[in-house]
Image 1 (cartoon, rainbow, N blue to C red):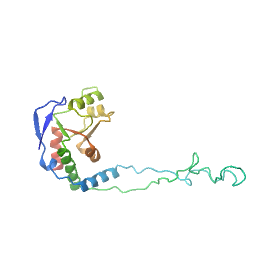
Image 2: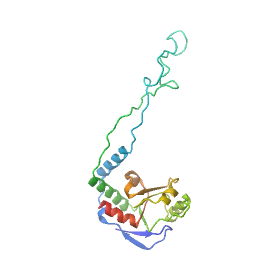
Image 3: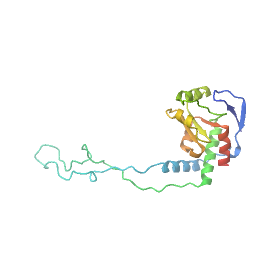
Image 4: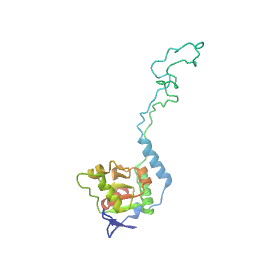
Length: 207
């Protein structure tokens, strides 16, 4: 499979070949699902903890007597319906062991994802992405506009500080490297921008 290689202004006449070994595989939905759930689960900090009515400090004394005041009966000032009270169904911190996916499965799942992107013509190849100093988000917006896309995920073979800085405040552009690929972002991407170097590095890493 061949796709056009563009300049960042949208013009270009050369082509690049996408190797079948990485970009021409059948989509394995079960394996991709396993990769995404593993990635998501291992991204949780597991530090969330709330206090129920018995864990909140204070509230040991009944605020007023049961009968005779005309007020609603109350047993503690730490009731969940009181301000400063506990949480009704408090989430308790639980230690969860990290999920594991072996290297062969990871590579196979990533090949499935990249093949699906290629099949749906979502991959856009560029010669290079150059951001001038000082890095401005308007430069990234112009690149996307010249390419005719409203939203894109950029995958590079190594970190580019200028591009990362320029796209940091933009919802419509995320930047990843081959070593930090997020399968969820890849699957949901409207367009994926790659350079020729990225394609070569991907082929080496996933073959």
